[in-house]
Length: 195
Image 1 (cartoon, rainbow, N blue to C red):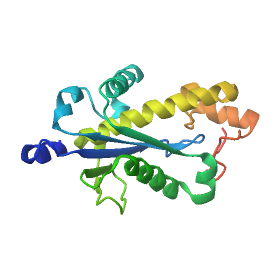
Image 2 (image 1 turned 30 degrees about the vertical axis):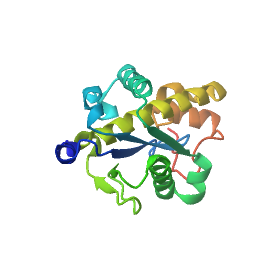
Image 3 (image 1 turned 90 degrees about the vertical axis):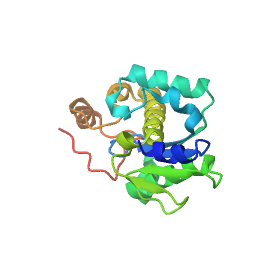
Image 4 (image 1 turned 180 degrees about the vertical axis):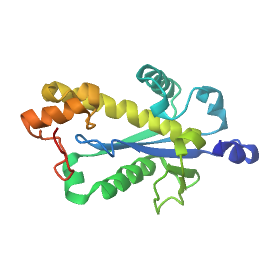
């Protein structure tokens, strides 16, 4: 993992990892998390890997561990209306930048999954969730918190089954769009083709 070389030279060095979730979703916000870790956290991170390779239950357990151990993190979102107005790339950059800004002091090394950000001397990492624990942990935090947001939205818009699809373009979701049209949290700038 990318941190091992850093920590072999300086175990006290803090590393910030950042990742976004919800970029390809049809509805709801794009969200990002940034998390700050150092070598002292290593024993807590044994189960941390790409959020897509973990069950929802496992992600929740890891998120609880973050909270219980006061690991510093930040979470930000950009709404569907912001995405429609400024585009997904700008929204993506904004949530990542805001999340890192919240916990960055100037002394950390910053790694971002796949996305190039000009601030913080950040380093873009290809397949970041597989190569950097901090990015993998950020992906888990972002996924848990965004999933919870989408479950809340499903109470207001039950016909779209957001609690199941989290806003992504599943067959059921496309059929619901066909039947009910778009809700207030759908991204109108996306090509939301119903079935």
